[in-house]
Amino acid sequence: MNNAVNKRAALLIATLSSFLAPFMVSSVNIALPSIGREFAIDAISLSWVATSYLLAAAMFLVPFGRIADIYGRRRIFTYGILIYTVSSLLSATSTSATVLISIRIFQGVGAAMIFGTGVAILTSIFPVEERGKALGTNVAATYLGLSLGPFLGGSLTQYFGWRSIFLANVPLGLIVIAFIFWKLRGNGLRQKGRSSILLAP
Image: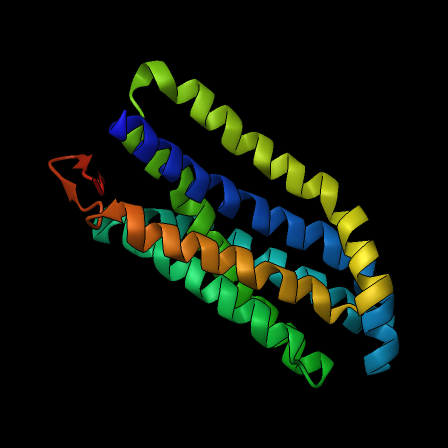
């Protein structure tokens, strides 16, 4: 029973992190007009608010996946969620479009570290007979983030301003970080082609 509870905790960690990044993508797109009006920037500069995040995430996804295989999946995943959460907070306090775009690059790097390791952690923890359900839940969270992003992002922007979209990611990121240190043990270092990620009792 305890092992089942721990596996559910690990699935929660991966699921929440898989929700965050796509939610950010789809919700920020809704907030772009508000960001453009506040910073008085043209359409080309405004497009980089979204593009900088996606470009950084795409560029660093494979490299960080490889780095995680070498130095530990848990370690890279933890650094990724930390970078993502801090970047979300800093994005909400941006004073100019240039600052926001620069921070969004770092947020994209954090997203790449999360996505490059999240699924690998699940496959390391769950046995083959349970892996399909775990991965299916993880993928469902990704599409849920994409689907809810426009609705929740639009509502947050309308009632609380565009900065609230970034602030909304902070408590979720902190929850993931808390579960990582509470339930996951070990760095997932590769040994003879295998990784070892242990769950806390």
